Length: 342
Image 1 (cartoon, rainbow, N blue to C red):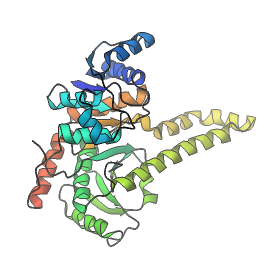
Image 2 (cartoon, rainbow, N blue to C red):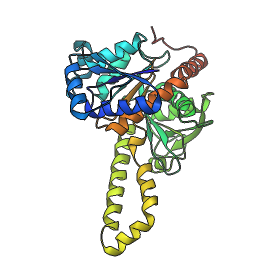
Image 3 (cartoon, helix red, strand yellow):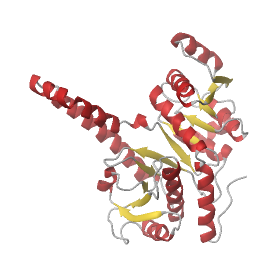
Image 4 (cartoon, rainbow, N blue to C red):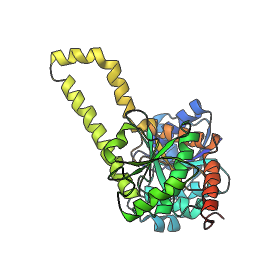
């Protein structure tokens, strides 16, 4: 299996990207194609002693910056690491693509170059988030500020497939974020979305879920528009960081609390790991015709390794093909959908 990576994308590129890729080659048994400025990659390899066994470098002279307008950058920077990587994926020269670069540019590139699945109006970003009971999938977590009911219905179908195929959840539950549990709660679009989800034969819909109940992890898939999802995602990240910091402050406050920490050190280590977003590493661009994974912009080697691991699981377990089948069934229920694939 060959995973294509954007070696120049993200705050810590190329060093952390290449370190994560090197670990993935050793531990996951994948081959990696690293796309980026060869001179920069070679210099980084020399300076940090990175083992490039199993990693092939493809030269790309340009880089898409976070400040670039996404669609314009994809169209104008033809020799950027992101565009070259996506084109190689489309040409069948790799099985998946992973980037920690600009989310907007990656979404635009995945849509324009790799293309959408039939029945998908707009791709969504699906992010796995730690929960009290178990991790859950939040989508859309930032791709689409506004979503029509039909889009939320498609997100639910794709999210259900992901949790079953990639995360191993049998009959995953699906919930719709809302400001109340009643079917009549929310905006007209959310009321309509609720009705569509109830009638969706390909998912196990459990109704609305209020934001305060989302972190419990009682629902496997949590569906909402990208604005709401991005707020939930960033609030969750902030609260997790605050909790870890506050607990550390409590335990380091005195000799007595330091001794108490020694007694619960293993439990605290597990608690910190449970809240660590790096354990999942990346978010699948759901609704794209080939696996495209968005790693966090500040990814370190561990996070990027886990993003590659997610890409490998998506390929091995046929997640995208299963989404294609489920969306086709949904389109047949609704009398057909506009084609998005070439």
